[in-house]
Amino acid sequence: MTLLAVSRLSAALGGRPVLNDISFAVGPGELIGLIGPNGAGKSTLLRALMGLTPASGTIELDGEDGRGLSAARRALKVAFMAQSRDVAWAMPVEALVALGRLPHLPRLSPLRAADRAAVDTAMRMMDVEAYRGRQATALSGGELARVLAARALAQETPLLLADEPAAGLDPAHQIGLMRTFRSLAEQGRSVIVSTHDLGLAARSCTRLILLDRGCMVADGTPEAVVTADNLQSVYRVRAYFGEVEGRMVVLPFDLSERN
Amino acid sequence: MSDGRRYHMALILLGSATLILFCLSLLVGPAGIGFSDSVSALFSERRDAIALIMREIRLPRALLGLMVGGTLGLSGAVLQGYLRNPLAEPALIGVSASASLGAVLAIYTGLSAVFPLALPLAALAASVVAVLIVQAMAGARGSVLTLILAGVAVSSFAGAMTSLALNLSANPFAALEIMFWMLGSLTDRSMTHVWLALPFMLAGWAALLTLGRALDALTLGGDTAASLGIDMRRVQLLAVFGTAASVGAATAVTGAIGFVGLVVPHLLRPLTGGRPSRLLPASALGGASVVLAADILVRVVAPERDLKLGVLTAIVGAPFFLWLVWRERRKVA
Image 1: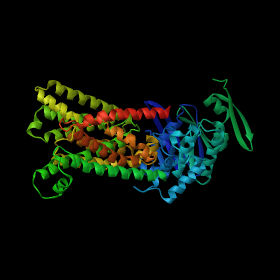
Image 2: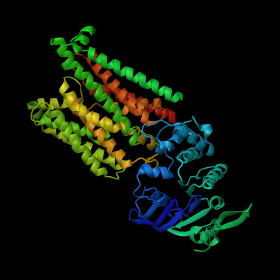
Image 3: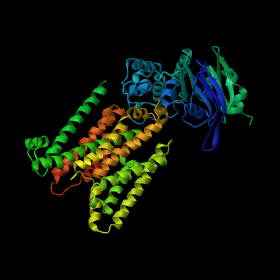
Image 4: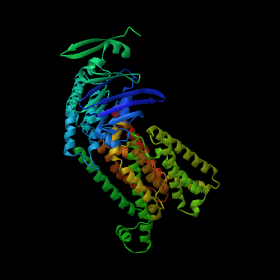
């Protein structure tokens, strides 16, 4: 069974090719890290999967043609955390998280008991219950990032796409966020998360996809993707590789000599 | 849930204020008709002077105040939510300026002297043309920025054509009539104006009032709103055509009344607990209250001078807006 099947996806921005012939499939229970240097096409790939950027190729979501899907039906299958964390006006945190329930609400219906429960669960998972009554515009960047993550979790979709959700979080909350994603995956849901933190991605994800200049360079287990060769050829860095408690640790420490 | 309670209190207060001001608007006027007389005249079959004044002069005036104010408040709230900008107002998409141009052309060509309804009809036609141009420019995938730029371009062109009509106006009376019409007023409107504007306004309100959820989602930006199942193309169409129909009709019968669509949503936003959907009914009632109150004020302050409603809303609205900006600035600092 596949949740998402992407085949021969290509996209261009302003006439410049940004994604080139990308194909992969995602099954339930996967936590996929999308990595690659700046401009590799990570955000464009996620946006194309959401139908926010025009692209050629086919996208199959939960067995249905992703392009023919109405916005309302798509919202029940996949949630999206945009890179931008812009909140237009003061809105209480709880109301903001509750926006994640919009796709589930019948027309004109207020939040039902099940929706409130989902909002509470999402807020607990992201450790933002304490901010419940505060205005979202008065939070720090990292706090807001967690509130927005709770918003996406409250949507309770089988698939979650998150564009750099860990950026700006303190180490504890970065680890907490990835742990939450991991537990979603263990419940059979799937998450694709783009990140620049190679160490975090390698430690937490079940699978990594490495993009470079719009092309898929590697796709596999963290050990298979985060290799000294790949880091040197794609990121042009040298890294320290180690192991802690049976898990891989990667720490880029210098620019590569080659190139 | 004190948030929700405060909002419901605000709605009740705004509703009561609107009702009271509507009744006051029926009672205030140069004819100085007593309270019981005016009420009985309104609901009786009498055909005397008092009944005539109530039914043919005061009732349409109060009804138009209610309708136009509600339109300005509602469309202002929708546009601020859709454009995610507290400085947006209905005039931004070019409807008001174009409706004014249509009306001015009707006066300029003398058509309105021959056939009185030519003025609002020309205004409506011009606003339809304007919104079609703006919508075509913004396109199906239209970005918010393109929409604003197209609106500014159409507004400027309509303004320039209005100036040209004034410039070339052969007789000073026509120029004066154009000037006075553009100031915006509810004086001397009839039930015909009410019936002419009502269907367009009802259609516009119906479109705008469906947008509550979409506007809530838009708090987090267009991409997130789309991912929450909001069809952004549909939202744009409904926001633009809803505003065009209701504001076009309002401008067609009363001329341009400024600042209501800008200030009222801005002022009421804090009472809605940050939910743009709640702002829609609140701002509609608030707009109706403000226009009714201003229209009563012009009759009380200068009963002999025919002070124009649009002049009063701008004179009161602009400093008030400055104060709002000042308060915001202090909050940020």
